[in-house]
Image (cartoon, rainbow, N blue to C red; front, side):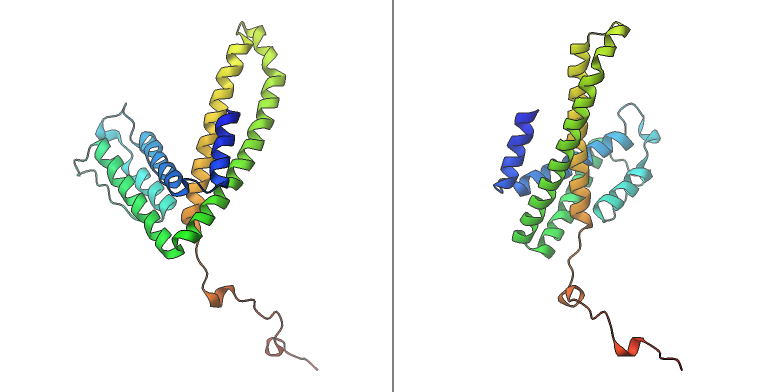
Length: 194
């Protein structure tokens, strides 16, 4: 776990594959959400297309239409949403400029990786201190520790992915006028009373 997270962090620090990382994170986010809203266990009539459309709009800030009448397979929906999300990312990239976008990706990834890794290490210490109690339930503590640690690590990766992709789509550029400091005090803003 440590090697993989440090390797990822080092690549981000060096600015390696930032765009590819973001595209991968976006695609994984779409696939996970399709898995959630359109379960393989359900027939197409039980799919929550409206929930998926709502999630997509909130996450990527763009509209997509998935009618129940559409005879789209699960794979078609994955491809459609993946393409729309990548297109929204490319539009965001154009508005920011490639160089600025890479800097933002780097800052967001480093921030989230560092925060989530620290939280993960703290949770691992907590797990380690209580894992011995699993023996009372006839469960091998070493096996349980490995299983829970892996689940926690995967959850950390998912959390990093979801937060970074959400933040990158929520960021907005300010115009020069908006970013200029404003005068705090104007003579016209006060009324004098006798």
